[in-house]
Length: 311
Image (cartoon, rainbow, N blue to C red; front, side, top):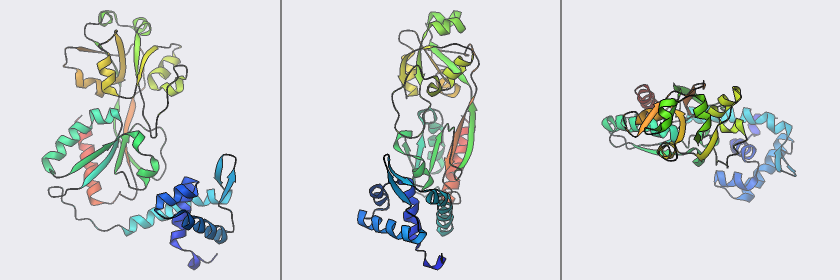
């Protein structure tokens, strides 16, 4: 194959087609017509002498050749976009830039208030658009549509930059007048009813199954290791809701300590150490290689790091 015959647009088409595995969705992603995308797929098939995508009972699926090409094409396009970025003379004091930040409820309730307070003092015109994990996906972060995602991640694409902001233990939060406060131990914990708080990732969530321990997350996995199980009364994806519900029906919320610490001076709540061992969790921030050398993004990352260090 003569590289001089390759149209750069075709590589962009190929990248999106292999991600979406659908001609219509790929066309929408690139803001072109479906016939134009279909023609692009036809040209790609001719160029590589390969079907690229084939129809199966589950929809369109990439061929073995196109699967091998996918990471190579993605790397080439990312490096090219990074090289073509303009120099940015960023001045936080005068900038009115909007930073788009995906933050889990845990991160939003613990880190974001400090981050916003710090930024307001030195960059009064800058705004932050906070999105939830269900608003975006990894492709949005990789394409630079979102400046940063802050969450607990188990697996990440290799192309992302990442930094651990902190490690956090767990705390049991109870109503201050709960009779369990003075006799808190493993047995009373197991007899009680509990509030489950989601370990949110990307994408729209689905209903929880109390029998599926692995999907329930850290607390229930830790209990399973010692052969125990708790009774979950409420499932929620919101830490503030979980905390408020501890005031009802003697419910216990076992949640990351930094979330519980916000209520340590509130007389309505009591914080206690879990009566069993739960592994610490890591809060990370991730961002696209497209934004790694952007001056404004470098500044924003440093603000996030400084805010995390003081939380």
